[in-house]
Amino acid sequence: MIIDSHVNLHAPQFDEDRQAVIERARAAGVALMVNISDRVSNFAACRALADQPDIWCTVGTHPHEAKEDPELSAQTLIALAADPRVVGIGECGLDFHYDLSPRDIQAQVFRAHIAAARETGLPLVVHTREADEVMGEILEAEHAAGPFRLLMHCYTSGAELARRCADLGAWFSVSGIATFKAAEDVRAVIREMPADRIIVETDCPYLAPIPHRGRRNEPAYVPHVLAKLAEVRGWSMAEAEARTTEAFFNLFTRITRP
Image 1 (cartoon, helix red, strand yellow):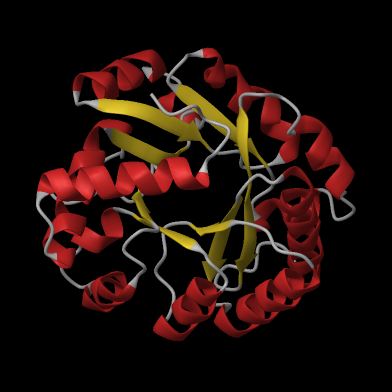
Image 2 (cartoon, rainbow, N blue to C red):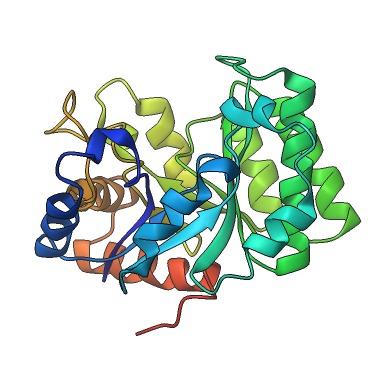
């Protein structure tokens, strides 16, 4: 089974042909997709797509948008996550590259998501960019206070943070960045990821893999990511598909295995 664990199908880039994009994904063999919430205020648009049987969703606020609701509470997230089509908390985390929200607000909102993941038992979908040390410190401190499952989405950060997260039992998702010629540092980290905790994603409409780089990304392209993961890890395509499928269902336990 091929699964795209991170799509943004409610994004405006898909307004002209959203259903056609979904049908192309199905035709390409993509059996499941997880539509990722960018901010709680936009959750309804994210959730609307999860009425389709092969699309699920998350609830959360991206660090870029943390300033929108600095007082976002875990209880708000927990209430929305009671919806059975919600399978994760996030996308949330820290982004010190763009700093579109103040860093202290990013951290505050991130901790609210962690509390919600801990309470609901749903996995935390983590975005991190240029924040390795602070991210590691927050995750380790919060995990010590009470465990939770986490996914380091589209992982392109350093090897040391990857090791720290792996020690906490984290899963990792591989994106189209792994196919970029200049991304050998990313591939080096992928080689060391826990073999039973790797899944794949497109993060569409962003980060289209080679040979589609420079175009709008879509879920139909996730087989290219899977093929690169297989190459990097020395797996056959069948093995890569089987391993990532098993890892996906071990993480997203609200989704019934077929």
